[in-house]
Length: 337
Image: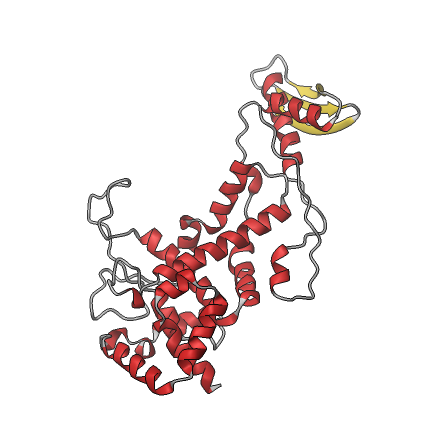
């Protein structure tokens, strides 16, 4: 138990270069080597802690334990790492106290988890839709909203008297427009997103891969994402014809299934797209052309949003050597019109 506590103190003081370039195993080895010499560790830790203002001491903040409890983090996750996750590189020049490399590691982890989940759940997604779905799960806007839901508050300016439990970063000057040079500053959205990524990286470093995946499922995958609203077909009828030809299906045929008010101001037509005797999609509209287009869109979404009943994630083999992975379904790819 004493060794775990010593690692918790040393971990946030590791050089970011090691976090950026080394694997988790190498980090733990370096931490254990450092912990083997307690006199050196204690002197280095005390020297670094003396450089911090009293208000920035993680152990003196009331906001950090509250955030730690709200996120239900493991006791192995030290407050020092959580405090480091709240310091943006724009607020501090010393990289030993910023979340730059933690955010990079967290971005890699969350992007992998989201890609793995989407590619196994929806193996037929087009590339553009897949990237859009990944961004909807782990993009800056999604993570910034997640950070606000965690109850994270941002300091107006990263001064010496700022509480260690506040998000610290340098804001953009008034009148700044997107696309202009940042000049060592960042936006609230970017800083909040990097904080969330850094928290994920801390969970992975201190608790391991299973805990990081569980944390990702609880806070990211548990959110409802309407993947069907991410599609934007330019020529759905033509794309459906190409799809049927590639898969060896009978050519799609649009048939009028129902109508009402043909000669009124607001007619409604219901059109179904059939491949042989099988109904592929059904749509309605104020005109036959609109209803046929919507039916083709429904048929294409039904094809691309196919999800297998049994889903097996390949990352489970990294948690246990005895785990066996059942290969996922691989689709020939999207249709090129």
